Image (cartoon, rainbow, N blue to C red; front, side, top):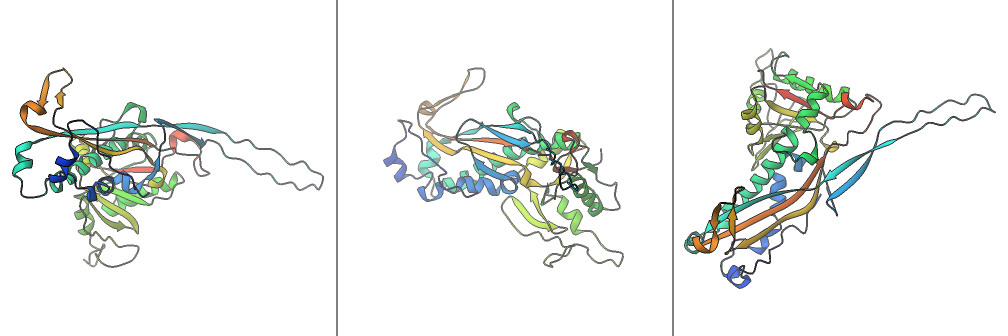
Length: 338
């Protein structure tokens, strides 16, 4: 979805508009691009549905049982009823934030645009944190429930690399697990180094199976991008994510997830508050013990505060293929061998 109202400046009394105009840390013309930049650096923001929230909580009714139709062969026969029911899925907006202290001497002496260095790193940090929480359960807010990794494992939608004849067969098995649960996989998010495994595949005649630049169902094309290199595998959109989220997962466990395939349209990222930016020259930053970490006034710092609020859910509505909720999930994992 397009984001139009994206960045708001803060109202900290120490923030001087006139001073900022003479030293534009964040030029007005690029403010509105920060959430879009984050979208480009986050797998879930690129692939899942996005929606707005007007409140901290949003309740979504999700279909939990399906109706049954009956033949009426007798002209005077009675038509039968069939019940349907819904369950509620709750979206809870949680805050994602970072504080960045910038020495005033750097701002004063810089002969280049400092914001051009800060902005992509902030976008990347937000995108990485969101992907880690949604995909792998790393620092996930408790109100969001379980991650995609956890629930895909519960549904037994996992494939270990090496169980098939090659990496393509393993990926195909992961896609098949999603299809067996009644969903149509539309995207693959994968670790950056997995690209080489597909590029290196050869046929029995020693030709490359995935040929860059050629269209077709057996094509794997990977172009260029800032943090997510996009291509296709089996004509399914594939993103090689390099914001560090897959590497965080790899550090956390030996049997790590190298790719997630699924129907990403079933996932929802809700935005309660776009990324807001405030600057202060008098802020005092404490750690969780109360100890002072930074004193902007005393240390000649300008402290930038970046804050946004997001919610996440996978409603997982009932379908005709697999009606048991715990055994049905629109995502599957491709995991490294232990």
